[in-house]
Length: 325
Image (cartoon, rainbow, N blue to C red):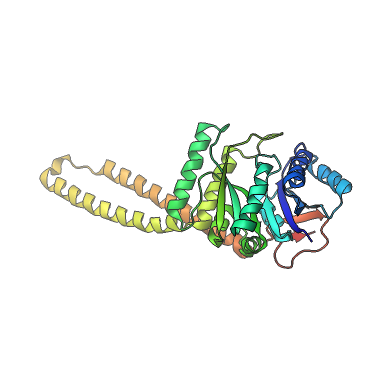
């Protein structure tokens, strides 16, 4: 009996890509990986176009044993979609791919060979360049990886993508981390397992437009830092100590100046500047602490990561997946 490679595909407004994606992936399986069965799991992340309709067309044509799907009650975001896909997948190996074909299906044969023959638990794709992206976006992306690796204990590879194949064991390990505010790239690094990286040239979307604006990317990056780094909280202590030392030095300087030139000292500007400086520092530190408190607040409420409105999967793995309505 052939082992199953399950392709998990988060989708948001990808109606033009669904059929193209399916054809491209199945062609690779038929021509280069005939020893494995392929199954698809599409997650419709609350799309407002015909994405779900296109997925159902594939289901009607090829059957629900090949085409499985879940459709969210609204747009929850890519991270909940990834969690839904991994938690409800049942294949021997799981592949996470984007529907826009920016993740080249041609890498799949090397990925499965890496796991089955070389003994890796995971094989992930890494962009060798950022061709087609703006210089500003590339700069901030590189800065994110640099800051993330300096501020946390995890090691993120620059140019790493969500495109990867993993064993059932690793997929279950990723799902076992049940936090609500998820940063999957960090979770991959945290759970460990032996991973091989495959470099590839950046590929343009086959159709449609990117859903990732600069604001979305910034929020995603800040979410990742807060999820895995406690450095900002510790930095608050050092900032406070530095302010105390600076205040002490300035107090000595001011006292000496008054003793030497008492007629030139009014102190008004000094007081205003110190108040503004300290006020800005305090507000900044409170903002950092507030971000962490907000995450704690969201976690303790224990809301489901996402809500599934419709699915052709009859049952869930208890305690792991999004709630079904």
